[in-house]
Amino acid sequence: MNFQIRYLTEYRYASPVTDNLNALRVKPATTSTQRCDEFLVRVDPETRQSRHADYFGTEVTEFGIARPHDHLTIDVRARVVTAPPPAPPQAPWEALASETYREAGGEFLLLTDDVPDDGSLDDLLAVLRAKSPLSTLLLLAELIPDRFEYRAGVTYVGSTIADLLDAGAGVCQDFVHLGLALLRRQGIAARYVSGYLFAAPEDGGSDSVEVDTHAWLEALLPGHDGRGEPVWVGADPTNRGLVGEQHVKIGHGRHYPDIPPVKGVFRGQSAAEFDASVQMTRLDPAASARA
Image (cartoon, rainbow, N blue to C red; front, side):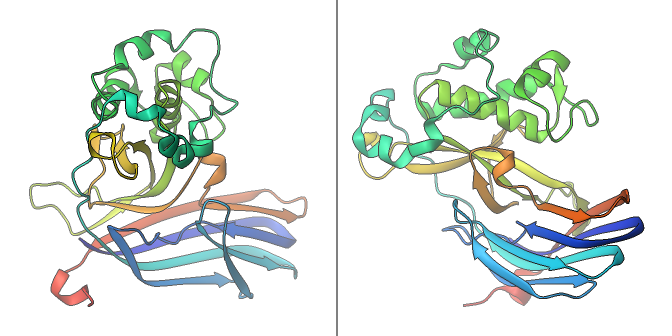
């Protein structure tokens, strides 16, 4: 699929601020099933930008505004081409014990600090264990939305897995954090993915829609029949299935704090009003595809 994406973020300050430093993780990644043909960031007030890849390989755009200003606008535009992912590999549980798998999984096998250790996940873990790692991943994508309601406003960006369990509801970020904990407890390496999801109606809906930034996870599955290199396979527990060409990946990390779209600080006593929007437009493949 071929997409044009505009991610617009605006801050308004009650009084001028200075030394406004920001790091953006908003550029669509280049993967085996995705390429970013165009990418542009405009900042108002204008300032010099620098770019680098972070520890996990996500491109980071950084900038600072030293002079006093009462607003900040970040206008991001990209053109992306995606393709359907290949069929995920099927391998037995025993393949997780191989040295090749353990080395590839690395730190994505480790639990993060927000995982409860009080037995509150035991029931979910017992239900989740299926005949293979792939079957477990597919079951996970159904189990979480079956057990928890998707409801905005119940949790916030700093909420923990315990908050989701207590509320019985949350959003995509919460579903992913729970999914990561459950998979890692089963010995499956898993990582948090940030990106965009084109969610237009399938019955001929609009080719241009306003969406939110989205989150899903990737699980590391052993190669077919336990042989060959392990493969990262995306699953979206908010939408009950594996990731497809309608998902546009930005980057990944151990959990959300590794991959926030915008992170910044400024000097001043002023409060900030914040607004963000993402517009995704599906383009004619013949008009946007490149060799």
